[in-house]
Each structure stands twice: as structure tokens, then as C-alpha cells.
Image (cartoon, rainbow, N blue to C red; front, side):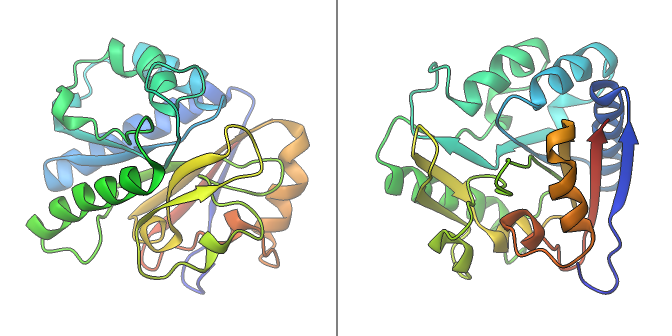
Amino acid sequence: MPADVTPRVLRTADFAAEAADFIAAEIRAAVNARGFCRLALSGGNTPRAVHQELVRSGRGLQWNHVQITFGDERCVPPDDPDSNFQMARETLLDAIDIPPGNVFRIRGEIAPEEAATEYEHKLAAVAARLGEERYVHDLLLLGLGEDGHTASLFPRSPALAETARNVIAVTGPKPPPQRVTMTLPLLNAARHVAFLVEGADKLPLVNEILAGQSTLPAARVKPATGAVTWVIGS
């Protein structure tokens, strides 16, 4: 991490509740400070229970002031079981009062390069209206894979060397292999990045990253001016 950024670590036995409370507090803080919150959701299975708890405990959140993006997407239709959007829709989006236009979906059903370019342009248009070089998330949620990947940035992937583009098409080692992912420059533009990690099997990776010596993809998420929080289920 940069010298002036010390990760905050929240270790909890009640992972879903603690993570949901943290997300709700960040949403409220962003809305109070800037009038809206730009929230990026992560994929995989870990967020399922967190989303459900957020629906239950986050009543009163101003979802009409929240803009939702996705850190990555599998190149499948939006109703496919492997779709990150489908998981978010069934566990969160269908249960909250959020305008459809506030949810920025990556179109996994079209050609990967086309989907990446389309998503990049959509985020760039918002950033331009706000005078930003890159789209700035108020809270960007990420997971941690067993190989140290985050979003769809896998070890040894050429995507890790990307310095200009914000969203690109990639091929991953896990099915479905075709993905669209945010790049490190966009992830590192966030005001606050939060890793949601559950499972004792991932603790050695977490400890390696927190020690500051790791070269894993997740260790390269280092916001230039933002904060990093790790919510770890024990």
C-alpha cells in the first residue's frame, strides 16, 4: 500500500451482518457528503449473504441516490446462473427501491470487446460530467480468489499491465473463461475499496497481502488517495 494508506481490518464472526453494516454506513456517508453514492458490486458467492443482510438491515437507505456498477462480469446472458448481475439481481436489486437507470450492467451477452468498450464509455460519460479523469467509486467492493485474483484480474494476466483503459475484455483460467473486468487504474481511483473475504482457507493469502510483500493481483489494488478496508469472516 502507499505509505500514507494503512488498510483497516475488520475481523468478525458475523460476517454478513458486519459487512452489510459497513456498506450501509458508507452509502449514508457518501450520500450525506456528495448527494449520491457510487457503489461497485463484486461477483462470486461471498456477497450473496451480505446482499441479503443489506436488504434486511438497510431499510431507509436512499437507494434512489445510489449508482451501482460491477467490478467484472462473466460473458454470459444476464439470466445465466454464472452472471454476476443475475446474482446481484436475485439477492439485492429486486428487493430494493432503486431506479433501473441507476444500475450499470455489463452486457455479458454481447462480444467481450464490445461489452468492455461500451461499459468504459458509459463510465467515462459520468466521469466527464463530474470533471473526473476516471470514474470515482465511493465504495468499490472486491472479493479474493483462492489464487489471489480480484475482479477478473488473474495472476500472470496481461491485464495487470494495463495503464490506460478502465475496462477490458480478458480470458480467465476459470469457467466461463471470457470476462469483462475493471482494470487496476479504475480500481485504484476509488475513494474506498473494501475486500469482502470469508473462509479460513483464504487467511494465508490475506496475511501475505497485508504484510505488504505480495505480488498477487489483489495486492496491487492500492488507491492513490483512497482508503482500503478488509472485512474478514472468521
